[in-house]
Image 1 (cartoon, one colour):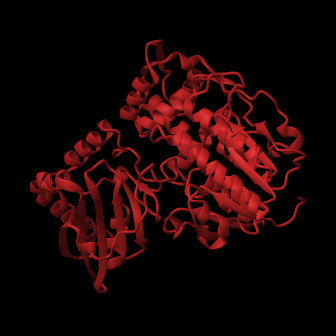
Image 2 (tube, one colour; image 1 turned 120 degrees about the vertical axis):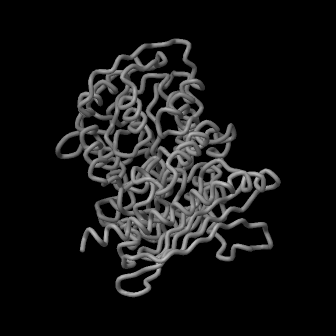
Length: 495
């Protein structure tokens, strides 16, 4: 294709890899379009103005035509690590739709990020699905480059977060036999290096390429090396051959921020060695000038970014399967449905800017400003029933963007300085939102409007709302009092 400006389409731009790749392709001089189901999630990401944002869904062929038109390269970065038993069929249909749309639009190349695996192994459902998607794209008739990576190490990646939390929290841990399997991890920066170069790298024929870092380690070694880099004592690892993926997934769901469905998928993918079987990529895309990143350095870089609050994207960036993507209706009595609300207003002895900084810093390690035990119990119960719980935390301790995960909420809308609206992603019999609006009263005073909204689903939803009604006075009143009180204290301290 030559070293020219290309027209590039990135699918999965709200995900972990796609959210990092899109701005790097723009920096490389390409004209970038991103295809997402919910464009509002990219409203205020730093690179939103550098790309064209198109709405579309890979499961809906009619929504792809306009986005694929005139594209030189299409990046396929959509993959579900959780979800129902139907995910293999759904992913096959999505891949077939992309292949057909690319053929019709005359796309010059498809680039797909798949999973590293042995050719002859009995693969897990998720690795099998990724392999199937790669095969469909390679056989599409459109020139296709499939990059197959194993465990990706970077701040916010699901694989890294699983290692980090297991090692941080468990001085002694029981693990399945796969802890002794061989893994060839790769730093996320090196994955992005290969993906950016894949746009115009030589490709005589459609095929797969294995990519991996310079180290081949056992999974247990990866945890011990993490402990060394993080300044922890060596961990004791006890191998239990009877620990099934389902049980291990449940355990990971309780100990780490990773939901049990995602934890189980990650575990099942570790049942086989994940080591590059060939190094043909070196003939097509040279390694980075400084060389591939060692596992130890990748861990060090990831921890530094976490400590500095510089995590670009996380595994939780993409919506969980089945999460609603429609915006909140502005009218709480929308379509005549039953809607329950808890609305409160309070004046604050601080200017609007100070009050806003407190509102925007809510959640994660900063807490929810009221009844910590109640929030902890609700988060724990959500984890028990397979939800995300409170352990996702926040990507940045001070700033939020549209689409950011925030414990068991997601930022649905943010008008910085005035409005923050969160949509609940906890397990509940209905839809829930939490919203704050900051108003300036005069140069030294402000007002905070707080609104909790619940759309009940059936009788269970109504019973749920009334069962927690007695706690609203404590939770929501306390939240209002403590947010405004914190802002007032900051004003006094700064004065």
